[in-house]
Length: 238
Image (cartoon, rainbow, N blue to C red; front, top):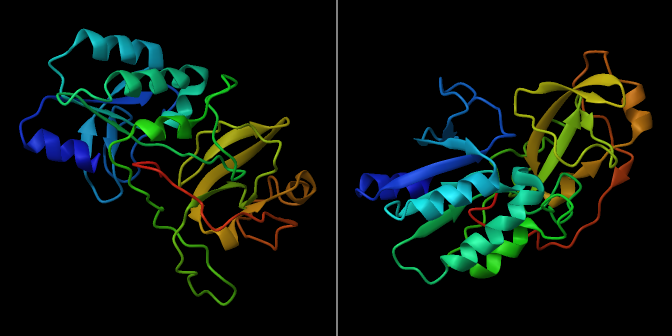
């Protein structure tokens, strides 16, 4: 959104898009879901469309010079169409495509576009510029001191505990949480950006002790995920 806003201020005709699945409002900003907004208060209007509808619109409006597409990992199977979109405009100097999204899912694995066999990271070879960004959350260590490392992983929490590996791939949440169904039980799902050392996967047994209790503490997880140091967030892929 920062790059798109810069183009807007320069007088370029821009448009923003979000997946229809992303029904979150912008917490604390007064903006509804028809905006793309950063955590530092920058925002642009956005159309909510499926990937095929969005690509058709882009192709039919050549006067649009900058296209900003947010949260591309939420497009599901049709998100794979974005790979062809960026290929098509790769060498077009008059069209700028800005994408952001997660290249790793909550398990720390490559984020797929549904069951299409393609991945969010498949758009990266066609990027002119890549920005690697970690969210500004750091997991507190015992004693209350902040970890302080870049947060290149996404921690999914169910009622304050690391979500189990078998929970759904796509589960829209937010910092303030939302209630979702997990195996017939209601849980509050939230997300935090964490570093490699503080990225965990929970178990269903852990959740049995906490679901519905109202607790949001973080006990020592059972399963620690070991990952290579190069976590590779791509941009603007967060």
